[in-house]
Length: 327
Ligand code: SAM
Image 1 (cartoon, rainbow, N blue to C red):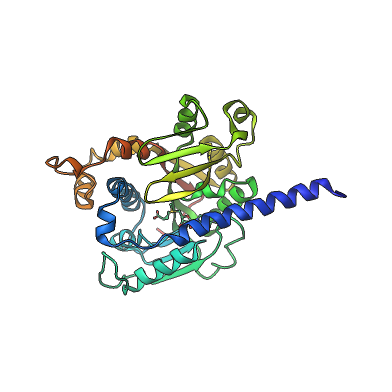
Image 2: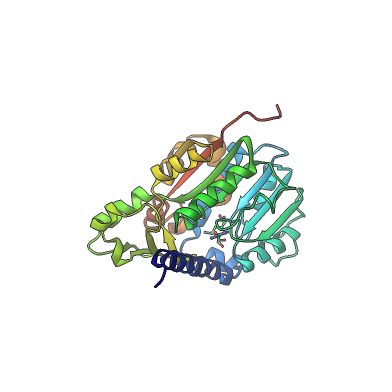
């Protein structure tokens, strides 16, 4: 009461932390699936398609020997992709303790996991922490600079406040070497807002997902509201059930520029698929991952509802300004 501004600042910080914890608890609680469970998932082909998109990004931008920073690495589902790219060093950070534990188990190769395999060839460091709250450059002083930073299906969790969005980008920029690359995937705000406008109420979805906006973000208020903190609840069958935030891409692009990160490209997943499926090596990769069926079975490929979920996402690449030190 004595300091209304201070109080509201405090309240915003508290609720931001509560939401960050909600996200962490949601992901922490998700247990590893057996191969059978995974194959029976109603979004199995979407998962495979997303793995293909991430693999293509990694193959396009990681080089042998690179130092990689995986921000919001989850359970380490991309470890094999980095191994195939023959990277030299890997640091994974995630807020969800359960996920980091699963990642560690997977890295150590002693998981009862369907991808039981030989040990990874690169050394790794796995850390549990909030990538959008505190500075990471001190924690990772001995590991930086990184050649590639990857943030897959996660940067939108930083968009709850401007401070967190800035912290995320500042961390990435501080840890990448000049000329280093940020690769990532996140929801495509244009698609989400278009769907909200077409919806009758504040929610929309299909048999595998739904999105529900809070009343305060009904379309009219939405236009004048701040580009940060635009919250919706996202449910994706067998995958996600937590609060997320809209990331207007033009704001992301210009904020990133403030941190010396320049946009190379951003493409909706549909466009990305169409473009890279023109290249035979990526068609092969899609077959190997099992996202493209042979057409003989009904369930051999994405359902229309899974394909609609793919449309909710985009892939992006940014480059840190400056020249690399090495040739
Ligand atoms: N990148 C992994 C992948 O592609 O499989 C995981 C993606 S999962 C959809 C989102 C991840 O973001 C979760 O593992 C979650 O714990 C993590 N995450 C959310 N907020 C975070 C934060 N503030 N700091 C670090 N990780 C966060």
